[in-house]
Length: 505
Ligand SMILES: Cc1cc2nc3c(=O)[nH]c(=O)nc-3n(C[C@H](O)[C@H](O)[C@H](O)COP(=O)(O)OP(=O)(O)OC[C@H]3O[C@@H](n4cnc5c(N)ncnc54)[C@H](O)[C@@H]3O)c2cc1C
Image (cartoon, rainbow, N blue to C red; front, side, top):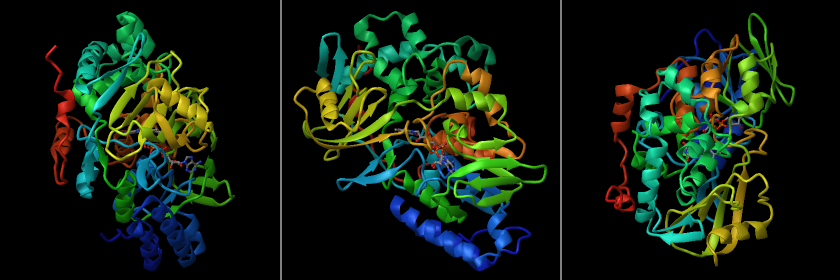
């Protein structure tokens, strides 16, 4: 598609097209990074000095939200500068290669219940694959781990999850609009996930079947709010199959394929390796200063970096109180590490879930496709992933006899450009902060999965929020249902056998 010529600007056409090569050539994450850098340099040379520095909009952060906003603004004819701190686009999604396997070091799964990302997959005809799913389940019991047929293991989990979420669809009747029932949200937003577990007063053998999930989402069950997971349950149609099933499909060419497709269409000026240090507003414009001391200006700036990172950027005038509170207390799951592990034993497909507070550094682990490495998650702040022996011991705590050959770990909490993993609100944050965080601060607007209305903390939420901040319509109600029903791509069959035991107990 031809880029829309920017209105009232003398930008030489050649430079716009050269800048566009960044997206057009992008095929893999690495290729995207290399070609984007080269193309931007060419564009800079071709532009008059004042045009190189002044844009209609500057977007800070080339994750899913920033790239979506950029695409939308380019379609409206805006000259957009997209500034990205890292040497790659994608942020908390990161398609990489390890031991010859394509791996995702951050966000991975997408689903038709997530209409914004589903619509992008259809729009660009991006292939998806369905994980084959586990054939064995290692689930916690009071006396250690037991091995089950996953269908049997999930029967009990379904009962427990369904009770856990009993009023979710009432609190979130329109789940893409989280404050439709502020009266009910006010009652429930005070609770943590731990509060709900305590209120249910489950026997220990049942509670430990839930806490690998509540700790993974909240960082700890004490830290995470009840209302966010209730909202996800409502977004999943209020069923266990929906909630569990959103972790089934993934883009075959990696999450980066979504970004590459958007960038190829948008053809923005993209500068990688350009961390932003300061954002200063005057009455007429916004000045963006990079760590390297470059200065760019625009009448409007979109900050699409994680909420936890806001505190590392100097804003003048200072951020409003709600933004300061959010970035200080944090929303991204702290201490989350995602590992890919090469196990020589076991080699088959499995899932393992470990309870919270019982000394298991890995809370979730599984091999979901034959021949692929094992993926594992940890939210344990004391777990040192640089210590290979500790990693192998952590695996063996769940699967005695497991043998590790190699592993790779990503610690999102220490990464200065994320300072946490996927977003997860804390108690009271929905009611107290959510609407305020979406409000502009003068000429500066904020975007990201961390402040999204619907799938907050997911890829879908990032795309939704990129649309919102760019003034494009977001999806909810019948429009969301219509987008979810779209199938211009081939949707692979899902292994329903996993759930065959459900409902017969
Ligand atoms: C381990 C893990 C697993 C996950 N699993 C899933 C999943 O399976 N499915 C799902 O839907 N979601 C998942 N998520 C969540 C999902 O990846 C995120 O919610 C989403 O990608 C966030 O997008 P974003 O654009 O809002 O923010 P980000 O992706 O964080 O993008 C922000 C961008 O801003 C850049 N930036 C930061 N600081 C600066 C600065 N000073 N100057 C310039 N640029 C800066 C960053 O480098 C980054 O590129 C997971 C996340 C993690 C970490």
